[in-house]
Length: 417
Length: 165
Image 1 (spheres, rainbow over the protein chains, first blue to last red):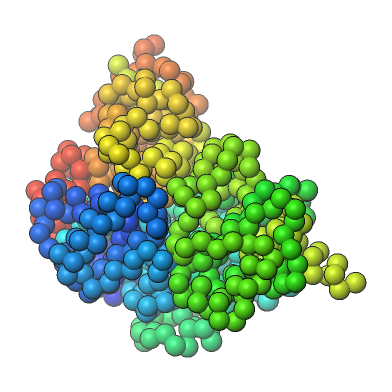
Image 2: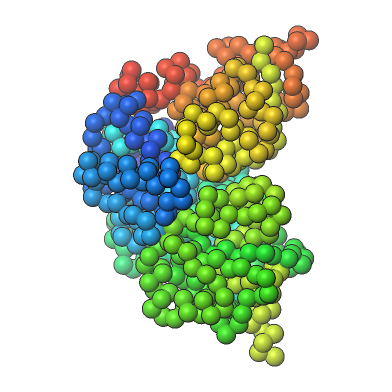
């Protein structure tokens, strides 16, 4: 019987053929834990489960990205303890302050691989679907159980299929596709299901991660892009992994990219999405470019292509927090960084930044932020009275130039005339 | 008697416990008990009594994987959470912590502040005026996890995961 990508991967990890609805125990290929939940994970592992050692020293990645660098004495001390624990457990992969956001780093390092089950102590662990892995987010206790046993149990999900047709128009990108899908599927539409994204072979791995990370925002247990197309050419794809004709999908969503306009997610729900042209004139105080969804080199380059030779609007702040040190290095190498700085943007340490409202750009009451991230929940980035709009990097850059939510073509075309 | 606390649709984990109130950010981890719904519903934490019921709309607990959201609810000894659809990670975290979750939509049946009797074993709510609400029975493994007091005790007791032979 034909299988979805999730069914193929979970069959492989379970050691027998599984289908949607089955409750199975699977071998985990890679487990990620970050600084924010690690203290509680370690406590459950040793004190509650009574395990002395982790199941593998090679297949665990510890990343300090959620408050990086430390913002106060508590987080600094917790990070010190975490580093010590990593040494005691002889864990190979520690990515410390400044290396970047776990999801981006694990893909750059080649640790997340096509066909692997990757679990992480972070809801955006769906990100690993960008290379054709089954990535899923878990809480403290589940990750602790994985650390102890190398295994986890789960229900094999049904799959919601999103099919993209055609190519983006100028000023439109992967974020707009993902937000459009959220607008159709809605926040709870893919709960307990996986999302597969077809018709996106032309996208970079980074753009695929934009789709994969936003899969959780429609409730997805995983968000998987088939590892095909030019960007996937360098990946080591197992011969058993690929889209199978006749696989069963719970829902199929078709999106015509040729007609897609820039999308804006309006406060305070991710699926509260409108065409940019429908949102009217929204005055903006701060533009924030970053996160595992849109903080990569290509996102900074897309923003730079709009900002080039121009200056931020009067009173505007633009914060750029690269997704990784590698993204920052690439931006530095080809002049992208200079373009951002010359326009008036500032750069933060690679990591999660203000996405969780803890440091590096926390919002004040009544501030309006245009954010390239993945959540605009009330209070997400600071004050519950702030308003967060989610957009693509291109729209964020155009907005930084005008001071209100702006279509990138309006900036680029106006100048050409 | 248990007090009913009504919440709407799409209550996300940033509403349950904002990221700024994570144990990681606190000088004293036990302070987490002060912060469930600290911004979304400031009257909740100071007034919630052991056994109280959270009766929410659809997609309860969507968003982050932070287990400290259901943990904060456990610290104030919430009796059960009832929602027509739980967000996946929250549901799993709540199960792991041994917090009973029932799948039903009672937001239009019960009222905020109402006092009810809750029979957890039978899954039956009885209101003061005698109305009896039977909740859909959760799968057996879920009850076993609740009875064990969470997944850690379950695993230590049975030496296997739910569903595993």
